[in-house]
Every structure is written in C-alpha cells, then in structure tokens.
Image (tube, rainbow, N blue to C red):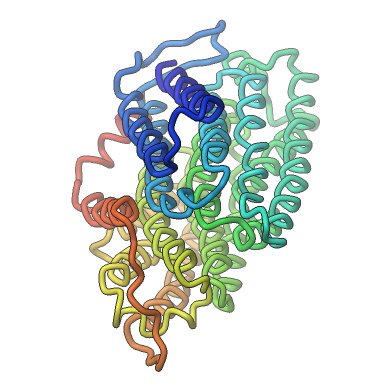
Length: 462
C-alpha cells in the first residue's frame, strides 16, 4: 500500500499547512505540493508487487503499479498547467485535498479484490469530484455542472450497487475470486445483474446512451477539473472495468460481446457526430472523449490479454494527448476568457509553441502517424479484429476518417484562418510550459518506444 500511504500522507501535510498557515505564500505552498506529487509519481515503483491485504480485499501487481503511476503522472501534469489558476484561487489547499482524495479512492478501486472495497473506492473517487466541478465558486455554470454531476453519479452508483446486490443475492459472496466460478450466463438474475453493473460503468465512462451529463459538466467545470474528469477519472474506471469484465464475467463473454458491440457502435457514432458541430472547445473535447471511449471499448471487446494491454497503452497515449490540449485551452481561458474554436483563428501568429503542442496532440487523438495515437488506435483495432467482427472494425475505421474533419478544423483555425484581431502572446509560467513539454514529448516518444507495448502485455499477463 505504499502508493496509498504516500497519498494519505500528502493529504495530511496539505491539511496541516492549511490549518497552521505555516506557509503564507500561495506560490511557495504550490511548489511544496507539486514537489510532493513528483515524489508520489515514483512511489508505485517501490511497492511490493503480487501481494494482498485484508484477506484479499486489497491486492497489488506490477500491472496495477503501472496503472497507479500513470494516474499519478496525469495528476501531476494537471497540477502543473493549473499552477497560475490555483495560485490565484482562495481555496487552493482544499482543491488538492479533494483531488488527492479522489486519486486515493481510484487507487483503492483498481486494487480491489472485493466489491465492498471497490464500491468504497468508487464513492471516495466520485463524491469529491462534484465539489471540484463547482470550484469556480462565482460562476453559475460551474454550480450547474456540479449539480448535474452529483445527480448523474448518484444514479449511476445506484444502478451499479443494485447490480452488485443481485450478484451477492445469487452467490452469497462479494469476493472476486469466489464470485468468478459462481457466475453463469444461464442464470437470468445474474444476466440482469451484469446489465446493471455494465450500465453503472457506462455512466462513468460516458458511453452512449449514458453520456448526457458529459458535455454540460465539462463546459461548466474549471479547465483543470475537466481535464481530470476526462483523463484520470476515465482511466481509473477503464482499469477496474477490464478486471471485472475479464475476471468476473468470463462466463458471460457471449453476452458482453453483444452488449459491447452495441455500445461501441453508438458511442463512436454519437461522439463523432456531435463533435462535428461543437464551437466551445470544452464541449468539443467532451464529445471527442466519448468517441475515444468507444475505441477503448473496441479493444476491450476482444476479451484477450492483448485487448487489455492495448487499452492500457492507449490510455497512456490519451493522457499525454488530452492533457496537452487541455493545457493550452486552460492557458487561453485563464488569460483571455475565450473558449470558442473561432477564438483560436490566427493563434499561431503570436503563440507558436502552444500552437504546435495543440497540433501534435490533436494529430495524436486523430490517429495520424507518426504520433503515438496512431499506434494506440492501431493496437485497439487489431485487438478488436481478433474476434473476426470485421463489420465493426470497418465501422470504427470509417469513423476515424470522420474524426479527422473535426480535429483538423481546430488545426485549420490555429494555423490557416485569418483573424484581424488574433489572440496576443499568452504568457505562461514555468510549470505550465513544463507540463506542455511533458505532454508533447510523451506523444512523440511513446510512439517510437516499441518495447513499451510489449512490456504492458507482459504486465497484464502476470
């Protein structure tokens, strides 16, 4: 539990510094917290793999440590590009307490070996997120985002908990190892339980038709919180979803293949079609993330180790790509208050570095070589094709072509479109520039490190 203990210690340090007011300068306090987050990023690599606690309710493995390290890295990047916004905020320490509490819940969730531990981690990771969405305290749309999020989260949690209760009613246990052999697709009640559990996960992943909350919450929340929702929250849910789907519901492979196929078709199509008509950058990224979740489900639908590895690899790429875009959007929103795509016309004239970061990360999300996003989507499609569902693969490939339009539309606005009054040079602090450099380097380097995907396959196979 080294990563979890490290996070708990950081939360107590931040609370202590807040209560005692030992550090008066917001910038100094931020530097201290970010230094602690850097240390937190390396803690998972020193933990003991292949161990368990609490009679199997909590377990670790090398794959789980890799996933936790990815979540920690994403949280650090978000903290870096939100540095200027947080420095001006009156409740900056409380923001980190909430964010690190959600991260701690995600760690417990992905390490759970029992539905009780899983649900506790899920609630710990979900409830503080609503408060984070309302962190622009004087903006009405931020409050609306928080209300919509807490209501949708409550509904999703209720469905998930109802499914878990039916699993317990038919098996008498909540332990993952004991549940797996007791679950049979011939039991109608267990099939219904699976559908409720899947619906709960679909809400958290913004898979269609459970996606209605996503765009409004993304638009209303602060940019840093939107990035956290889009990347860190989604990634943690995918990690535990893979475990539950492959480990618990292995006997339901025939059923979940059909459910996933329908969800993939709807999620990719709706995400792409609605992204085409968006003007607000945060709403645009919301529907883009919905479509990306469809591609991740495509890889998972194979039910194989390679499918799980391809999803984890793509989430690594997705972390760098999406956070790079959100870093630029956050910088523009903070300095100018503008969030529309048309506001980015002529952006390249005075903001060359930020424009290239935006372009490279958008190319990666679109799956254009040689960015890492191309290889990530290639692995997902290859994994999905292993079941021979070629009409689904063809549909996904055609939608990748459609997605080129709306990604290139932003790049066209940045580099080509004329604007008599383009955005002037936006000064960004050293932390924000460092975050953008990390994201751009991650998008480029990850695509060329050929052994990384093989390493993830080895981790997931253990």
